[in-house]
Structure formats: C-alpha cells, structure tokens
Image (cartoon, rainbow, N blue to C red; front, side, top):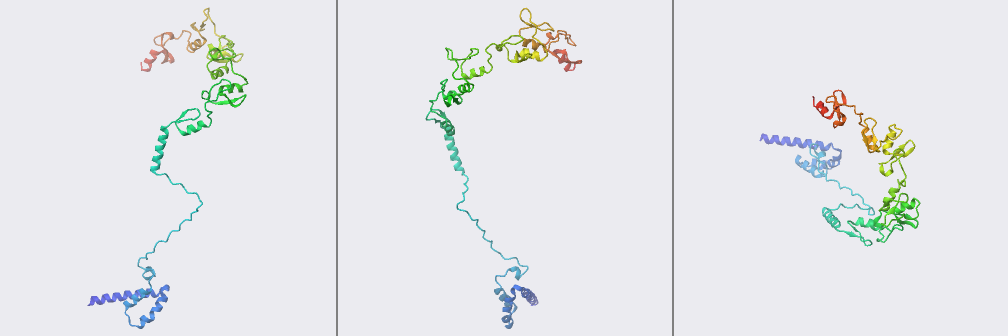
Length: 331
C-alpha cells in the first residue's frame, strides 16, 4: 500500500511539472486559456487534464511539449526539377558494349575487303584510301606531254607550257629551269646529257647528274685527275672546287703543291721513301709515318714489323702492341 502511494505521488509531481512547463510557453497560451475554465470548474483529475491537453496540442513539436523528447519526424522536402530547354541540343548517349562489338566486327570486315577504283582499277585496303585516290584519279588516261609517262610512273604532276598538271614531275622541273623540250635520247631509249653525252635510264637520274656535270673537262689543278677519278672537289689556291679532295686536304694542311712522283708515276713518302699509287694512300700513310726511326722501348722492333703502337712506362706510343699488352697486364 505504501509503494502504491509513492508511485501516485511521483506521477502527480511529474504531471504538475509538465503542466507548469506548458503554461509558460507563449505558443500554447491560447489553448491553455480555453482549457482552463472547464477543466478547473469540473473536478477532473490530473490524468484527464493531461489527456485533454494532449488532444488539443496535436501538431505541436515534441521538443516544445517535452524538452527532453526527441524531435518529431519531418518528411524530406521535394527537390526542384531543373527547367529543360526543348530547343537545346541533347547530349549523345555513350554507345553500349554491344554497339562497340558490332562496330569492331564491321571494321574487321572492312579491313578484310578490298576496294577497287572504278576508273583506273587500282585496289585499296580501306574506303578512306579509295576516297583520297578518287579525288585526283583521271581514269588512267593521263600522260605527260613531253615524255608520255603515265600517272602511276611519276610522284606528282607539274605545270607545263600547256597549263597546270600537263607535265610529270621531272619534265616540270626542266620546264621551270627554262627548257622547252625533252633531252635527246639514244638508240636504246636512254636520256643523254647535253654536256658529257652520258646516258641515263630515267629523267630523274639525268637531272641529278646535270646538277654537278662539268662536261668532262674538269681537272684537278695539282694532280690533273678527272672528276670521276676522285671522291669530290675542294678549295685550292685558285678558288673553290679547283682541287680534288686529296689535294685539297694537302692544301688545308699548309702544302703548296702536289707530292713528288717517281719514274713509275707513284707518289713517294718524303720521310720513309715508301711508294703509293694514289695521293689518298700517301696521305693515310703520312698520318702515322715516323720516317723509319721509331723503335719499341722494350723489344726495339720497328713500326713496320709490328701491328701497332701502344702506351708504355715512358708515355704513349712508346711500345709495340705486344709489349704494350704486357705493360697493361702489370709486367
């Protein structure tokens, strides 16, 4: 019995505290004012008052009725949809895997096919190659006005006396250089150089030759060799391209004339008297010639009797190759 009384007292105390809290909320004063007269006039118990208040304050947040209660659930606000312009261009959707597979299969089929040109019957591996060819294809009927070569025999077409794209590349180069006709041909159909009468199989070869052709009259000012007998031309005391490459090298090293020649027409080394057939061979020898006085520091062998020179205890090129190998090994 005492336990029941204690529970009733605690419940009454809690209800009174809850009512006191509601009376001091400004948002609830109108509701409490309307409830005060009938509730207090009739002898309702405390539980009835609390129930009556709860029925009239539906919709009031729980945290206002009871500060310790959790906040009431609030549904999420609906999102605003973006306004879409119907006239704006739409983005293309990415192709699906199935579309990619089909495209790859079609591409493989295109690669396996061959595409012939309807005009000249040339065959291409792809459609873009055929389209690029068709832009300039003439059906295989085009020929150069001078040499009568076909379109497939020249890298490009050039302007001639009759207008653009009337000559092949080689004939167009001759036309721009001032020529008005084809060069001469021999009985075999080869093109002849007008200066030296050399024959060439193609116009391009003839054009490359004529850039350096001297009509076969050029001679080296020192050794009198022809252009075909040397590896090139070089400067000399009389100006550029007046000496062969060997004599020009001697001139740049300070010499004033060609090397001496013996009765047999061979070039003699002034240091060791060795004989050589060409100036180039003599020049290569003189780079390492020691006039026959060099001796190995250990075995005293001559330079002509060994395969080379090497470093030794007294400096570079003081031992023969065999003794230098022993020296580097620690002997």
